[in-house]
Amino acid sequence: MDELIPIISQVGFPIVVSLYLLYRIETKLDMVVQSIQNLPERMKERN
Image 1 (cartoon, rainbow, N blue to C red):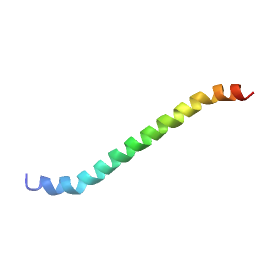
Image 2 (tube, rainbow, N blue to C red):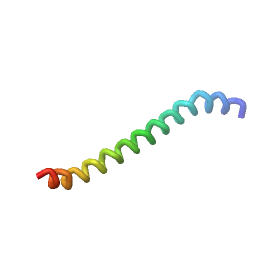
Image 3 (cartoon, one colour):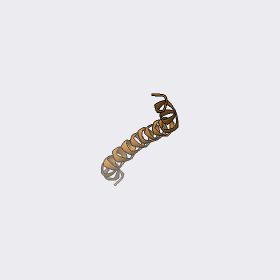
Image 4 (cartoon, rainbow, N blue to C red):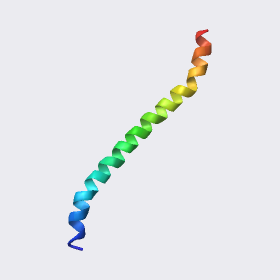
């Protein structure tokens, strides 16, 4: 158990940061997908 705590403290932080960044990227990608899906309708309105 005493060996496990330093491993978690060394590896845990990068894992948390990676998960946070993946979450942020996922929300941005959702916005991009939604914009691409709305693009044909906007182009029709323009013409």
